[in-house]
Length: 190
Image 1 (cartoon, rainbow, N blue to C red):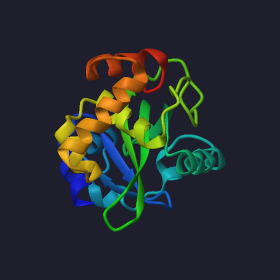
Image 2 (image 1 turned 90 degrees about the horizontal axis):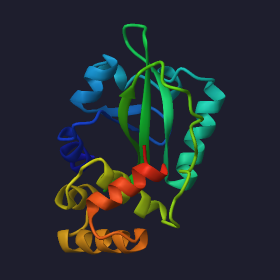
Image 3 (image 1 turned 180 degrees about the vertical axis):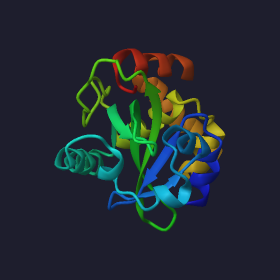
Image 4 (image 1 turned 90 degrees about the vertical axis):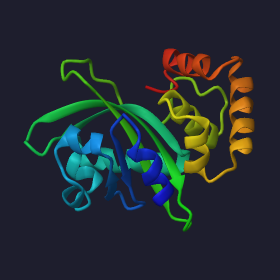
């Protein structure tokens, strides 16, 4: 969890991490500012406590994430002050060094008046990428450097560079910027 914290503490986007049972185990400072819950408060919350949606629907979406390994879509969060916050979310499953799996959600708030979208278990276009490659594409699109991704994913920097090169090849682009733009334009990430 330390490598994950180290990288996500630097992320400009709000980040929430949930354990396999759907309980929050971590939030970065941006996430705390976004919803208003401090670290001690958020770790007492379950996924259904902070999402303003039918609890069964939320649980089924979480189950699909665990099967697929990633998701993107729009959700509505409950803020500590009682208000609601609509956000676009890129989420992926991540295996920690102890073998446990967590859900990492990178959150971007949007106006409450924005049209509702159904939270999809898979993107509109996934380019035939494996879950690990979609996770890499999400991180790349969020602006993480190769070194940060290598640290987070417990791989050598050279291995990360090779994985990024393979991802770019599969997407048919020549740069990480092009990959991020293509992913955003096609709805592969939000």
